[in-house]
Length: 90
Image (cartoon, rainbow, N blue to C red; front, side, top):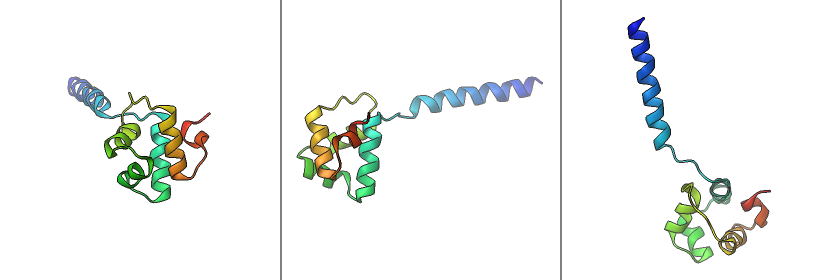
C-alpha cells in the first residue's frame, strides 16, 4: 500500500509540475493561431501583413497575459480575411 501511495504522490507532483509548464492561450490567441493555420500562412507572413513583429504575433498566440489592442486585432482580422468577431469572439 505504501508504494502505491508513493507512486500516486509522485504522479500528483509530476502533474502539478507539468501543469505549471503548460501555457494556456487566451481565447483570442487560440483563434488567431487557428485562423492563421487555416489560411496556411506563417507567423512571419502574418506579421508582415499586419505591420507588427513576429514576436508580437507569437505573443498574441501564446502568452496568456497578452492584452492586444483592438486596432491590432482588427488588423489581424483584415489580414486573415475574416470578420473581427472571428478573432475576438462573442
